[in-house]
Length: 211
Image 1: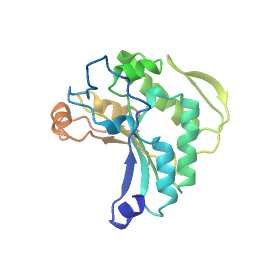
Image 2: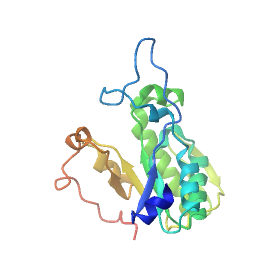
Image 3: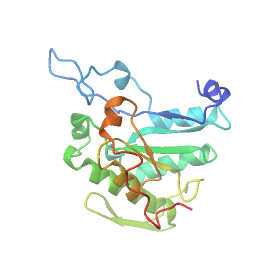
Image 4: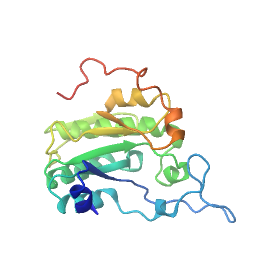
């Protein structure tokens, strides 16, 4: 599929993530975040980093990545190495789409309080950015804390792969400006109606550019 996407002239192929979908109570069907029936593909998906690596190895120009990685469900030291490794092995073609997740029971299975998932995501991303940009990195926050560490490889892209913040809602642009490089909007009218106007949203603050 990746070769076909590349031949058709597309820029990127992104892979979604759910480690699992909790089984609903007897007699009920799994629901999506809007209350609709959840498609079977949600619990029949590849690991997005393995899939990105396979797609990257099969192509030469196609950018690959996560659309999105559920960052709160990962331990940031290990995730930082995974992202950097895939970016290196694909020749700097990785796009890191991130999100906090919507399935509250899935988050609880990973030990994450759903009410704090956005704060957890912010700290995890910032901790990874420290690891990617420093030979000797450390980070101390409310949800993750570690003293000086050495961790290689560093990403091929500098300072690190684009962090694309997924989601919708009135705070999404604040998250983009806080620790992201771009917005990866959900697809569908429900998401667009819940998102702030692109023309009226906050502008990137001075000093937050990657250049």
